[in-house]
Length: 280
Image (cartoon, rainbow, N blue to C red):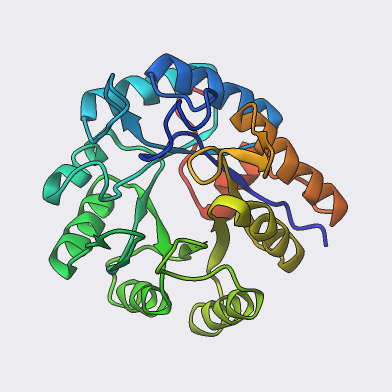
């Protein structure tokens, strides 16, 4: 298999704190430095959240703007993907950073359970976020926490709300949502291929499931997400020293399956992204 494998690094998220792992980058400068290291290790997409000084999540567009400026300067060509997830805000605040025109943004097209709450994505909010992404030329990454999300994304693409080819991420291992189960994973991949044959896809495994999802995706021809947002450990006894360490681990799996790690140029071509700003 010679298809390049895209590595996305989810650098911070909204949950993990420095008390969980001191390597979790919180401030904008920490995030830029951590992403730069991950970029050099092979990551071509940075999935971005921002935090307040007390480590709580926020959707503050000013913080997203500072982060994006730093990433464009220190990681030229890297794909910047903002999160519109629900832990950082509610309603229209979740899309308040989209006018900044990142390359991509996450989009969850339906609701599901999380460990202690409902992750609410009502249809009117989903439709509005999708329209804002279209307005500003932002490519959505569909975060599928449930089978229905795959069907909904395909339906939205067919009626013109989402661009094609779709880029779909299977999120597995969240308690009360989609389990990290190999037969389920295989079924999701085959279902997406049946409904949207031209779609690109990747997988994200939460916690201890990160490394197995990385391997399943690489083996089956998809792309991968890693990083301290989803998992702060290398194994049960060892904390991950950096986002770059998790990226290198994914890159080693690419080598095992004889798949080259996608460069940022290859990633832009695979997903159909615009050219990088300020990069020749």
